[in-house]
Image 1 (cartoon, rainbow, N blue to C red):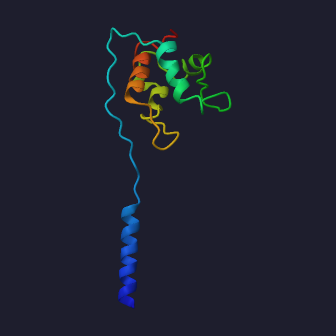
Image 2 (tube, rainbow, N blue to C red; image 1 turned 120 degrees about the vertical axis):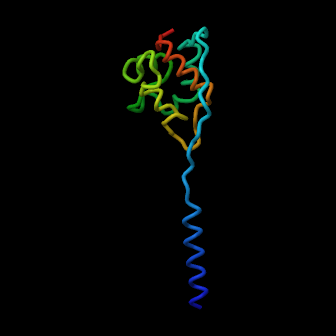
Image 3 (cartoon, one colour; image 1 turned 45 degrees about the horizontal axis):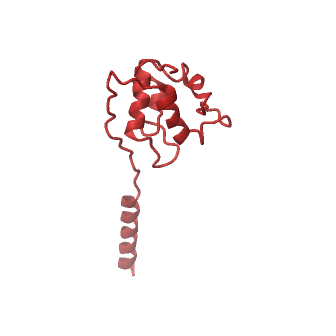
Length: 126
């Protein structure tokens, strides 16, 4: 009986130790936006916010309101350093870079590249 108990205990502990893990999110390398491609806030960035972010980032939360008509003034200049995406809090907290509102939710690399390109191009309200 002791042998069976030890076997069950060792098996249970082993199973418990090796079955717990944390998924780490790995994002593909972010492509660079070509210098001659102008990224427009209204045409390229706002649609990303509308499709992915406004469910949580709306007037009902303390986070930036990313609804159309409010988003630009909500993030620039408080969260965005124009011309420097890598050091902008907004970029650092994008789903897929740092912020995970829902496990498994990320922006795709093309959307992240557009946001990065827009910030690096000066974060204009165009």
